[in-house]
Image (tube, rainbow, N blue to C red; front, side, top):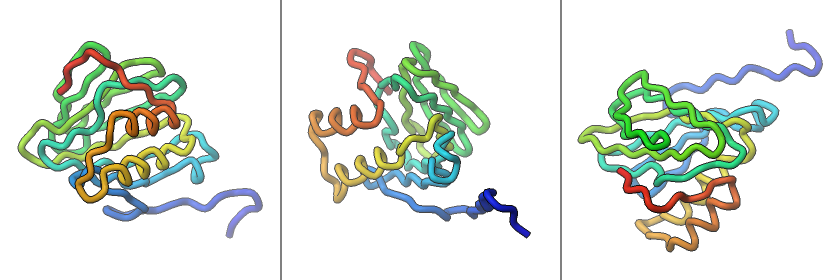
Amino acid sequence: MTYPGHANPLVLHPHEGEYVVIGGNTRCTFKVTGRNTDNHFGLFEFEMDPGAMGAHPHVHHHLTEIFYVVEGEVELLAGEERVTGTRGTLLLVPPTAVHGFANTANAPATLLIMFCPADTRERYFAGLAELTKDGRRPTREELVSLMRRFDQEPVEGIEFP
């Protein structure tokens, strides 16, 4: 029985959900988007090959982001601190905090990334996938333009990873 005005639960099994491939070696699966949560949050699964760069240092002005390492080892930039995240490591990034992440290990890694509010964050990753399609290397101007459309600002002067 369903009740008027109530949404149905969502079940996604491993490797289910709409996804994009970024840079040829990272699969970003949109497990939960703002459409599923009245824009409260989104949850994406980020599967990275060894050596894959996740995100260079940047900030969000309005977005809170949470990273949770599911599998493997991920280098995390948390403000001025560098942390090697292993299974079970969580990083909470409030608005305006500098952060970044990369798989610097020799094995695949999987992260869950939560965004609050959700906005249309999947459009940022879809845009990034398009810019890096077929091995293409986007220009800095293209990347910064995409970032700024989705509450993301690059931070210069920090070597990472």
